[in-house]
Image 1 (cartoon, rainbow, N blue to C red):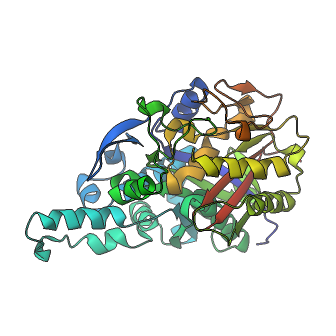
Image 2: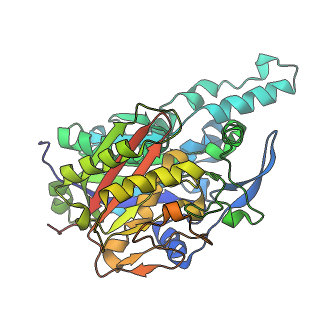
Image 3: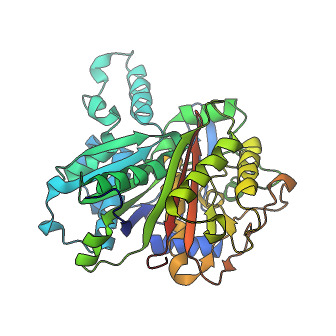
Length: 413
């Protein structure tokens, strides 16, 4: 194997608040259909959130669902759907040469909070604490549940990279394929964040929890009246292969991983650093051999926080000067912030642009914030591009972790 091996995407499986397949997800993005509901959050009452509605029993027995985790079920569903989409003859695959690399924001909070609540109903007697707690809460749980469900005996682990984690999972998988550690990778990001009240309380106390009388409009990046994040669950997992292996089996190729970068702000735990974000994008472009003018779609991270959106716009203005054929969009306006799954889901929603040429818009913008008025920003209605050749997927996270991933149309030089 060589570090120069080309890595391609051959399958996608996902669940998002507004779709349980790439086809459904994409149709709703082009139609401008958000799906955010109000849910009851322990200690906090009703809050807007993105809730997935997929059939976990499609790939798991009910006992497995009870003993496992919500994020494990999300991961299994997405991995199984990606496998089907890839057309891989699974029974012929050496399972010891398959890796699972899933990005997560946090893990274990849900199960621990639930157990503390449960035993509080019984005088805090720990005999009521579930014996499933430890395997449910270890950080590798989502990836580990996938290996058990699919019989994978190769490496598995999660990548804790805050809200940059979806990109980080894909980058890790690409690197492991180039190193020859595996021949096939399941990679992406997953999240069960809406099932923990702690993340809601934390964002509320930071003044960063979004709200709106109409929950479908609560997530409104770039809008002048945006007021914070809408917390969501979801997942997107891809099958990644070396190009030569994909061609050998006659696989359909959805896109080629062209470049990436992960770097750190090293300045603030919460406030993004636009200089480091711009640097991250430039390094990804350098690795890909592309210029800013070669990027057709910039999929933004923008979470609808007051300062976060502006900081990203500062970075994008710095990099994408004189790029009349570069279009900018955002997916969180439809589904909220899926945390560890965000980057992977946002990339998935844009991948079909290689085939159909459409750029889905950012919705819920009633009045653009002047500081977010970027050239090329697609607002409220889809835009038909002449041709989509390359997508830049931005994902940034707390503690100043930045990730930029470039995927190009296969066959484009």
